[in-house]
Length: 384
Image (cartoon, rainbow, N blue to C red; front, side):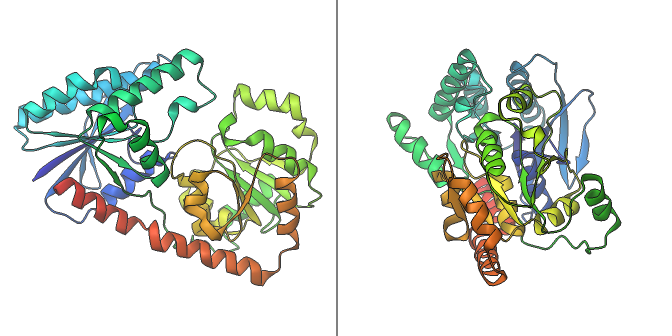
């Protein structure tokens, strides 16, 4: 039996978040009887529990701002080491999601290696480029990434662009990398058009099926909300823009509100968050098109979910997004008029063309991003 410890996600059961969804699917679809998963969960109280056949160990995490994630990963890693020592785990794997504890990873790795263990790292995607961080925090993330790459026994990248970046930027360390994509599910939501929960959601936000464009994702600058809002306001569409995001007490939201005046456009509707998986999938299925503005990171979960459910997808033209969408999507830039022209084209699009885009999108998911194939690749990697 090989013990695999997964740290860096907020834990399971998953709500929002790419890493959380990944861990949820990895444990839910486990096939091998030779693996035992241990998942760190961010929590305010202690007490282990079992979920989907894996051991979940909560880590009590203080509220200390950006340092909270670093503290959480460090505490979780130390708990893994203590468990391995107490239970004499043979050849354990510690899989760290994201590069937050680089300054400490050399010491932690040496202790893990003494137990015959291996350190795997998912480098995520350019955390140091995110606009929400100040210069000092960005410098820390960049340095931490460098140290994590240097010390990892294996770096598992969910994007070919990220793998290329790791191999070229840190060539001096000769990093061992492996590409395993992130996943999505192409199955339909299963909700009927008259579902009471769906009907109530539409009533609450004054929306109707196929009468809205959709955005789902964190309300942060690097997701190009300013461009999407301005271009939508510039467009002549009579459809609405439904934005599913948590914007409560978000300074960026209030800055954009002041600079763009989007609150004066009645077509723009902020719909808070939707945690019910089937409902969110149905909302995607009924969207006229999905707008995706992510400019930082690797394979983005919300993009895969959009391709699996929404027929027409309008993506920001960056390598990460083209890698996933290929010919199954349309692409826009920050040039004035680029996105608004795509919106106008989408409004004119006939059903035959919409169906063609939808078929190509689902084919992309089935071919390269199916959860079953990804879980199989991970299990093979953990058992090697």
